Amino acid sequence: MTETETMPVGADTRSGFVALIGPTNAGKSTLVNRLVGAKVTIVSHKVQTTRATLRGIAIHDKTQIVFMDTPGIFKPRRRLDRAMVMAAWSGARDADVIMLLVDSERGLKGDAEAILEGLKEVRHPKILVLNKIDRVRPEDLLKLASAANEAIDFEETFMISATNGSGCDDLMDYLAKRLPEGPWYYPEDQISDLPMRQLAAEITREKLFLRLHQELPYSSHVETEKWEERKDGSVRIEQVIYVERDSQKKIALGKNGEAIKAISMSARKELSEILGQPVHLFLFVKVRENWGDDPARYREIGLDYSD
Ligand SMILES: Nc1nc2c(ncn2[C@@H]2O[C@H](COP(=O)(O)OP(=O)(O)OP(=O)(O)O)[C@@H](O)[C@H]2O)c(=O)[nH]1
Image 1 (cartoon, rainbow, N blue to C red):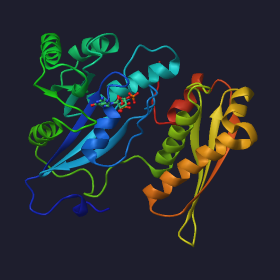
Image 2 (image 1 turned 120 degrees about the vertical axis):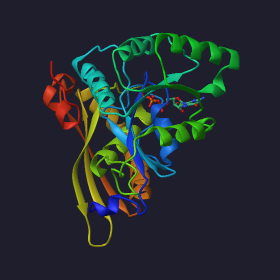
Image 3 (image 1 turned 90 degrees about the vertical axis):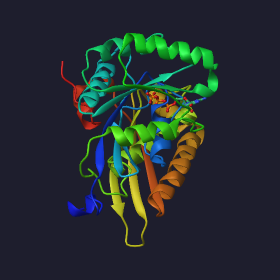
Image 4 (image 1 turned 180 degrees about the horizontal axis):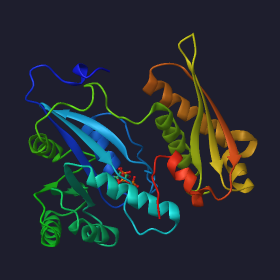
């Protein structure tokens, strides 16, 4: 795309970056998907599914709002976890507005409390978004809002439900006015800057978790190794599912290859819908020991880690 194509005619446009900060499972991915209106990040019931900083891009009035969907911030346990925490905070520092998303049902306990503490140090404009209001009583919601505002001076507080959409219009109106004047960063039809190969790997990873989350630990990882556009309009995609042990490989394959076949089928279906073309998906399972402790891997998956 050329520079002129990124700017709508008529100017008085606004644009900016909004960092989503929040504990795992607060609903960050669900909210970005709702605001952007398309599936750009992967939503799963399993916590810590967001490993890299992904973005969704929304247009509201004449404002382009770029969401930085950070990985959940929580107490680091392993080296990889620490890299995820650092990726989340570095994302926040690049933003025009930081949006703290809290699961109203869980309140400010645990991770949310630690994030509030961390946010005190950050000078950027901050807003509070209380999510999942469909699950709590209004009086509890008000208590939560005032407790959070006592800890931090938020510019504004919103109460929303990312799943049913209530409160989301007010939030968008506010962000559209709050972001600075300036040309748009991305072409109008772009909803994510996540490369297709990575998006394709995320989709397969989601299917893997949905089917095997009880048996397979979090230590598996998917990479797209080959992407070949064919003359007949279809695409051939080869991906490797990396696991840590032989026993996990057996689980990923399943009895008579049933698990891998089912994962492949549902990933292929979703990929062809997103790409709008037939997809031939080939999945391989390989064992790679201790990749979770290898810093070189973080760089490959988009996380910059330094001690
Ligand atoms: N009832 C209700 N559930 C919600 C709402 N928003 C999100 N959820 C659910 O909360 C769970 C977690 O949502 P995600 O969007 O994956 O959360 P996340 O913050 O991106 O999680 P990580 O990627 O692990 O950091 C999912 O099961 C969502 O369906 C809401 O407004 N109401």
